[in-house]
Amino acid sequence: MKNIWESIKSLLVVFSYENDEQLRIFRKSLDKMLNDSNVDRLVIVVNILKETDKKLLPPHFLIYYNSPVDFNFWGKLKDVQLESELSRDYDVLLWFGDTDHKIFPYTQETTINRKIIINKVDPSFDLSLNAGSEAPDEMLNFVINTLKKITVDE
Image (cartoon, rainbow, N blue to C red; front, top):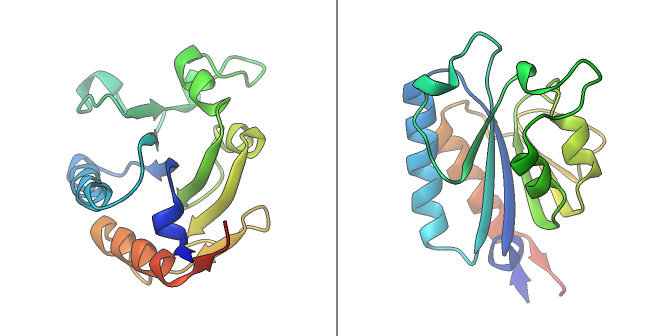
């Protein structure tokens, strides 16, 4: 019997940007945890405000910065590469925070075995976890430790 964390090979993470420091801590914590995991395919979508200049954000080959301006008038995603990533299957989606982002319907159409939302409640997710903190490292530690306690039949 494996636990959920051990069974994840492909992971989609959606996170909302607040500031550079928060993003830096989140990336550092995520990197550390993924080093001790079976995840071999990771995509991170960072939701940013319309006013945020993507060019000023630290580039990372696994991160797609997503803003309301990345959608056309009809709500279609303009980023072809991100759209392609979202057409692939994932073992788990970790969604941090509110779902009121234009990318949300796209993740709902993506084939994902387990959808987990952190610090919110949404009926379209399989599991809601309350980390009791908004600090990125504490949220990630809580999520990983919780997923290690849930066994799965595969």
